[in-house]
Image (tube, rainbow, N blue to C red; front, side, top):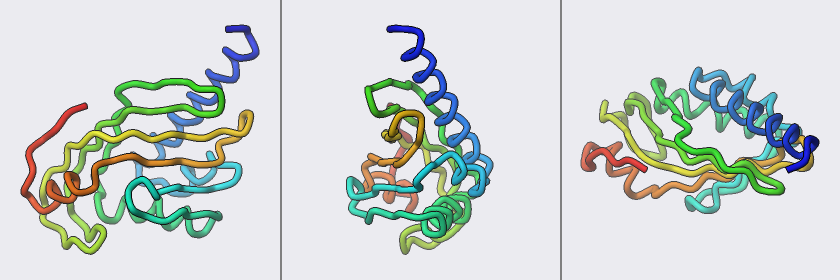
Length: 148
């Protein structure tokens, strides 16, 4: 890789890690500020595409409400031409309503992947991939721990 590409990759990775850190601290404002054009694509998990500062802020804030102790642990980070791909382990306790599931206090420990899409240096979309049925089973206290 050439120096400008290395610099761009380093910048993007640092931005993604700031985004993850903000989500771990339930700091929706800081996580939102990492986006140039805020967008979450949840179609891979049977959800909508959410665009715009207000709706994306509300989505990020909702993570901290349903799983206040949520922690996204980046296990592996990969770089592509227009993306940073992060393999996660999501951990936390289900202490708030999530997707119609009332709080159970269950421990969540589940793998996921997020693709952070870039336009040059600008973060423009986060696309999540997770087995929702398995995650929801853990939220209901019916699933064991899984690791990536």
